[in-house]
Image (tube, rainbow, N blue to C red; front, top):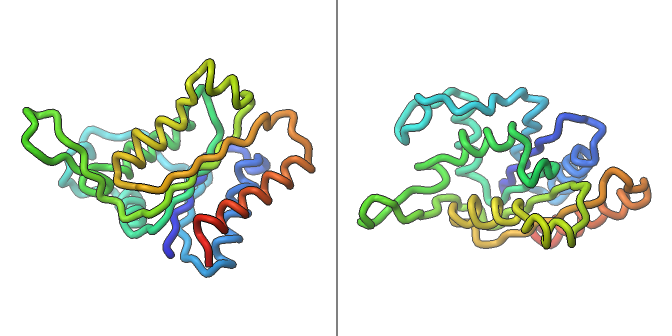
Length: 197
């Protein structure tokens, strides 16, 4: 399988980077082809310019590459921290520029102009790994777990991805080395379940 792995965390010593490193190593060991992007390392420009908004435009080569990889991918793994209930700005910009009409979705039907979304991605499974300093119960009851809604419904659901799994590792700031080792084992078990060799 071709699997896209997208990492968005500025600190190379972060647990997000550890998840990404383990993910890429595991997927390669299982014989998958990997499209890997560390958005901060690549200095990905998150700003969507006006000229990129129309569907049929010539995109900059780096954006065209991201779009092509997303179109070819059979699976995708997104890794990022929970910042204010949202992905980091650099990842939101990647969504704006790469998950675009004609690549990931299109609007069809005669519905008085609002548009009915039709997903175009051939991705079978999307997995999102998050880190957070908020307890799971508080995230759900106080904040409504916005990341679940964003990724499952607003992005992957709209783009036609049927299988979705998300795991939040928390509370990261007080986690021990032993706890992080256990979490990395959980990452590998998840990958084995969704992306077997």
